[in-house]
Length: 254
Image (cartoon, rainbow, N blue to C red; front, side):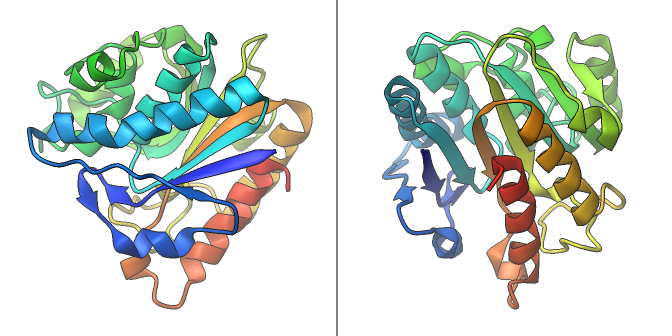
């Protein structure tokens, strides 16, 4: 059974608008970030995500995460490790999320979670969650059409596998490890899903992406999923919400 945890934060900032995404049976992340440096507050937010994933995996349920940013995947992988499992990660994103303080032009932490996850850059959140970095070879990244120059160099030189075509995504094979699929919905062409804080022109159209994910979900067991949401404040008519929910439902095979 799918069990979803909604984390109504954008990084360390509460985003009450995300509460409208909740569906019947979903849990809400009870985190209270409090004081301290940014990454200390982020670790406090990701701790309930780790506990949720550990508990679901140990019960045999399928855990889901819906959050305002991609750092939630650190909690996801921490939960896997606490449950004694080593997942493969399929990361779908218009951006690389592979920056560090040394490569990022802006210093924006929201552009760093995948690098953190594989042991690059600041490791405070990983240490706080008691987790080890994920092997780069266990990570595949789809799209990544909007990369900073030094971030591109780092990603190209890494062991992260790049998946470039929808047909390749639909035929993705994770090997024997459980597969976690992470979808940052800014992946979707902004013509279909414009309510994004960081839109990137181009990308797969929503219908084509949904078809590829449905094909993937029919052929490969997806052990868990996470979604980084659109901005409800930029979506007054709910059009982006409806598009993203259809795409996410295809990945869930529902």
